[in-house]
Length: 183
Image 1 (tube, one colour):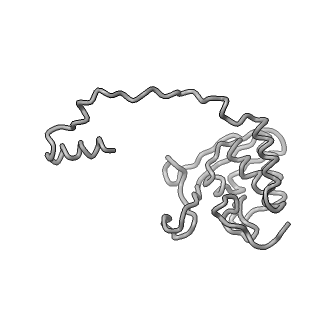
Image 2 (tube, one colour):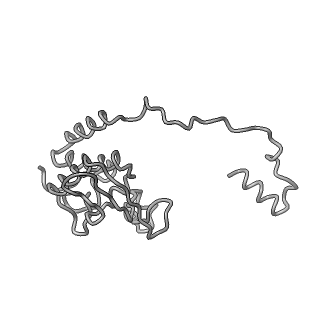
Image 3 (tube, one colour):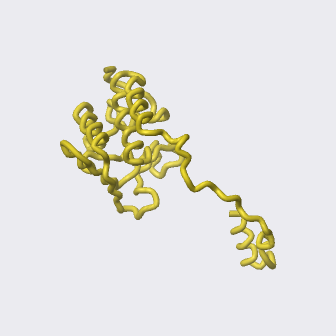
């Protein structure tokens, strides 16, 4: 960014040349391979998904299990999971399924959103506003999502993840604790 500022100064003829062009420094090489020692393996992921069911009140942990399963098995961002709707899920009785994402609902402070709410309704990251992203999901995630929908249903607008009171999401610490049903 600083380099671009200096280039702009050259363009405005405030500087005769960008002084950084004379530097002989090269950035250090970075490892391009993921270190498997620090990545959660499938066994650990399953243990974590089981452990999360014990978090908070009984319904909260079970709700979180499906949320984090989407992040692990489908590599979804939290905002994409929050915007996931039933009509974007192909969940067959057996075998692989598919998720089709069309929106993201990233959480932020109300002062930083366009709407003044704690969530912004946006298109998918690095895609055109109305573009979608579709990905296959393994049978294990299909089963988890089917169980989740059977137990919790969906919000009136089809969202899979919401609070007991119907608010947008109760899956992140900043979203606050839902009020209402205790179990």
